Length: 206
View 1 (cartoon, rainbow, N blue to C red):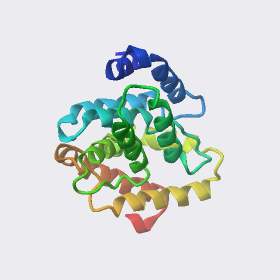
View 2 (spheres, rainbow, N blue to C red):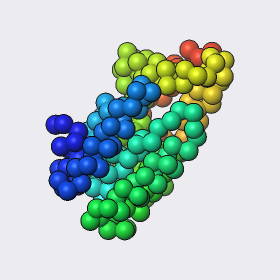
View 3 (spheres, rainbow, N blue to C red):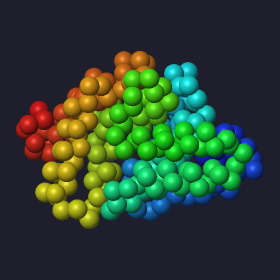
View 4 (cartoon, one colour):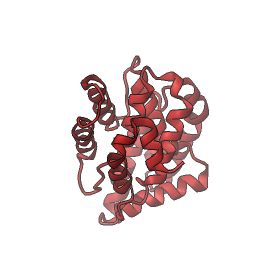
């Protein structure tokens, strides 16, 4: 299904212009990983595991907005994406409570560490991190795309920063919170993270 059509199925045809704006954002030329393909993958997984959520519609909306603002030279993309959701969704018939939940979920992707009872947050974070469990070739393509997005960073600084991010993920008690995602992704994701750290030359993560 076309992404704009997918948006209108979720929000109604009166919000079509918002969907067109979002799809354009995910098609920005500086993006290499945070693209329409990534958005589609996250939406597909949210749909697959939707039964876990308390409000699957809020999670779907948060998936649309979670990378809506993406500038690799800034550190506040999630906050700016959440603020964009608050601003854009105000023009829809969504309730203030649901808009607030969408924005909260987008902000949660800063840490990917939802609380034990946060079923909405667990679903969104699992869908966003599922790429970590990709088969080796797909994972390598993901890592390469992330490097391209940070092409302005010299190799030595990128490798050090990337290793910090990957070690931080490995130090989480669990990477995936929904039972189905944990069973499918946890082991492969940890293997991929350790392998990438090793390739970055960071023996401490092996």
